[in-house]
Length: 210
Image (tube, rainbow, N blue to C red; front, side, top):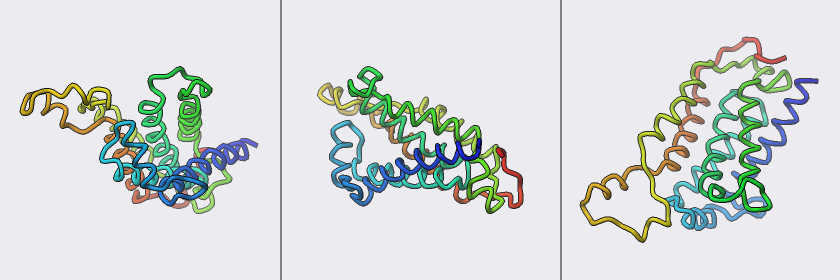
């Protein structure tokens, strides 16, 4: 029953997340496509908007699909967390937590589920178990550890600060030209997906969860 419960969580959470990615990338399921997503990203201060719209869509589609299939775990759940953090901070960060007040209730729920799946493993009803694939645990730890370290080394600016531009050539301009933290998170998500997909997997290994 534990494996069936994990399958249910994976299929629903991963499936919906992959659908969100398809909305951003292809305009599927009534989505806006990359152009419409880019316009929304511009409003919340993520630039270059079209580039990060494509990265966000690819991250959600890949992370959601890997999670739903239970393949290369825990790459799927780890990748899925990054766009949820960006959504929480950029779209809901200044609001109460509840969804009826425009808050981050849904991203918080998805982060909790993805974290639980990353820790618990995909279960027996998964492609990892079917093909005898097991991703090295230390590689996942490196991906997770890289996120806060790289965020600490960056500084970003919110759209509300754009009207208060410092003098050209000043130290503040040089600091403001560094990568936005949300761009770094998106880049980490994309990179971790590539690392997870290309990782050397141990075939014939036992699954972490029955």
